[in-house]
Image (tube, rainbow, N blue to C red; front, side, top):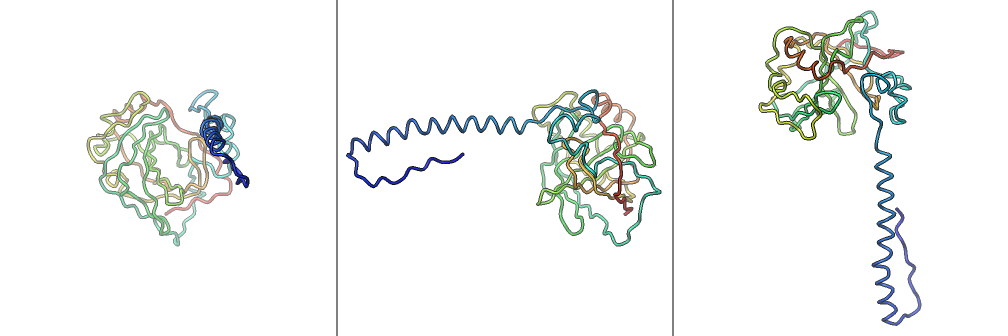
Length: 277
């Protein structure tokens, strides 16, 4: 909003007139400014609101790009995620430095945001280092079935660990989950899984050791992609582990009872490279 500027009065005014003028400015001008500011704030709030999206029907992945202008990348983007990792298309680059993962047991809080169950970081100590640059962990969440595929095959679930550097650039670790033995490292999360959308964060009693959750064999595939949810922002660095971790049938079903299907279908690879690390 432009500020009101009053030119300097070169002529003398009597004290009564000055007092009257000052009182007028104090009462009428701020009211006008407040009214204009209120209208501006309402407009900004409306501009910031985005359309509701889901994983099914007319608000599902097929229509995301049509729901809101800010979702345009979902349909017009050229580097969208997830993808099908075909081994025949994978390249090996010995010059690429492996991702340096630096996790340690830290506290998290849990939310149900209407699309997934998400654990938000409380500590800033978890990070990964890519090409010498720090990306700090902000949150992790789950999808079922898995969003990424290997040779056209999906896993039961997928874990996404989302990181951000000081410039706001995003890097995500993708971990496949298959049905097997109970995952004790995630028990504290599953004990408080919210069945309905939450208004406040839920405390997780015990610190989570993410390093112990990752697969022992950390062979991975990297490629340039996007967020897998609206607004489908691109220029996201993806590192997807080849080997899955396990969760028990009961753990998988507990999540699927809340979200029967919250995955985005695979997107065209186009001319992108998939590098095996």
